[in-house]
Length: 189
Image (cartoon, rainbow, N blue to C red; front, side, top):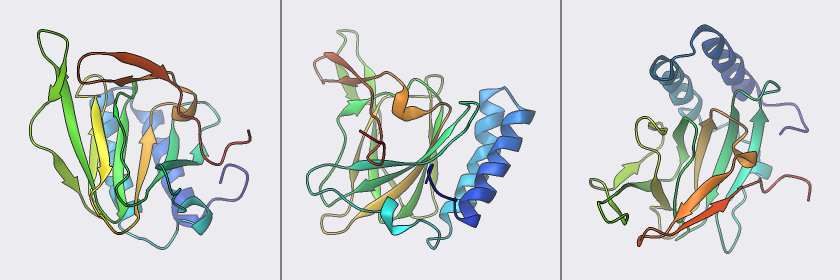
């Protein structure tokens, strides 16, 4: 969508989020202000163009919907085919995840005294209209998967940077670390 006109719902969300960012530099206040905005966006499943809702047969895809020109945030659709999920990973910036279609399961992780990554609490299901937050200050490491074995699920993510360009990390349960930059399925190669 970065190369086309955003839908009115997405455009309204981007404008409201921009205003929220202009009025608060505090992360907790920002997340509190942005959460109801994302909840309102994902309450309607009539605005995401089909081009940004297509699953890949082997892995999940993330499509850039909007990158703030000032680099303050990005809006991304994550499209999960049946059985698809992520490795354990971080974000390094604040983020909000809003469920648009289907369902996904998120499992937070924490490092133990030996440096291994272990589940931190029970896995949480995210259903249409629900929103959750991540950030280095509130918990930034998790694994996510499509909760539906026979359907596509789509979530809308908002991050405090152009997430497709941010160097992040994949973690193995034994403590291994691998840096990565995710990019976008709809980016020019």
